[in-house]
Length: 57
Image 1 (cartoon, rainbow, N blue to C red):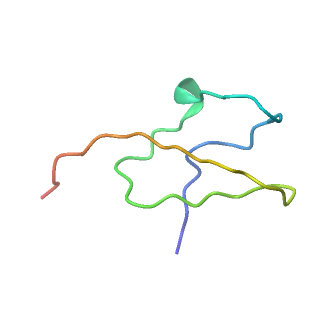
Image 2 (image 1 turned 90 degrees about the vertical axis):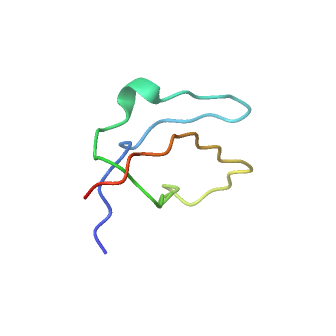
């Protein structure tokens, strides 16, 4: 399965909140998210928000 990049790699830090609305690539409607942690590490929460897209014919 091909996974288009929705958000390129980002630098993160502990105990911080990050907002990436402006960096998200426009790839069309999506149904699943693949979350890669590079290098391997821990993430306690991942919250994603979206909205329903119109059905395409």
